Image (cartoon, rainbow, N blue to C red; front, side, top):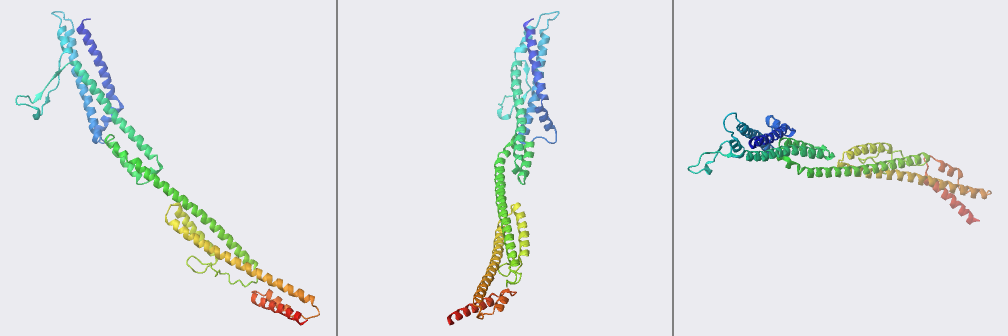
Length: 390
């Protein structure tokens, strides 16, 4: 095969490869998405719009350059065919393939770059090899440009998904901020990527606030648990006080209203049953506030525990008072039995006290400890006097 025809075949093989790669790039997901965004209502903005336009223009220009080279190769092929008559034109074919045979479209020359005798337009001719080298660079630039947009979209989505997966990102205003960033990133994946930079720090602040609130809630829950334990202790103290009242039949322990320190939270006297109900209801309200993390719950729980402690002291004081009165009556009855024993020992002598009156005083309801003590003291004094007389 003659050299000219071999050169033509080589060029046709190179152009076939170039056409295949150009078509593949045009049909790639990156370029189709880019062209769809350029043609649709949801067009890119900012830096991404400029990049997308450059990629599209570069691809369109590559196809135009491809056609210029292909036409030159076709002309060289026609010259390289051996004619039936006349001389072969292999030299002319080689000149097309190796020389500056492709004339580029004229470009305007800015006035600032022109001299007096310079043309307003400038045109140039290049070789097919130079054109193909420029096409290689343009192809790489277009491919990288489209891939950069697609990579930015993917990276931004991954980062946003990671941020949205944080529990702290679900509340307002962080969720609204992430939504706004997502819209901006969709419009300009390249230029708006800087919007993501401050979001992790902002999310860290929200996370720290949420953790602080959770610690505060946990502390309040602990306070509520202590308060409920206080309420149980108060119930036990009231039960002990009620048992003491029931077991102190006949003692002068006053009315059932607890005047000895048992007061409601407004300062007025109230029985312990109603006080327990009020404390329980108050604690339930405070527990709800604590679960919500309300700061007022801590103050309220402090007041509640003080009121509960005061009621518990009052119940314990009354129970202790009743027990002391009961022990006093038992002691006086013991003294009475001792006097009766002394009277029994001195049978021939009338007792120096009135046993019936003392017994009546000890069994009286309500019990009058002062009268019983005075009668027993008279009996002791009578025995002492009788002993001195003998």
